[in-house]
Length: 132
Image 1 (cartoon, helix red, strand yellow):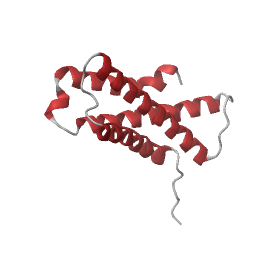
Image 2: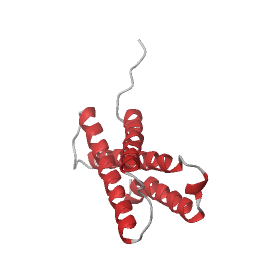
Image 3: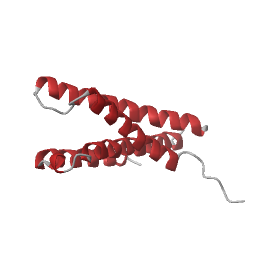
């Protein structure tokens, strides 16, 4: 697995976000912002899971507990979501955009990112129960 494989999904979501911003896609449907934050959280989680697997295979990392893996993945998602909101705040402040209309919107964006990451965590990390 190469670095390019780790960043493919986040870059794809960033490109989609950029296209929606440039073409005005954010104005035709009010919920597109939250969907983008969910997709962003999912993409960061997929990359975090892949990075953990990559470093585990190389012997540089040993995390056998699935709960610890889940916490690490959600930690990466939370960090990425906070950094994204800092970027939005900075653009609002310095470039006079209006990406964060309210604290409620910002908190909803953070929650949406964590929900997307949590979904991937449940799919990729939490063990599936076998039928008895």
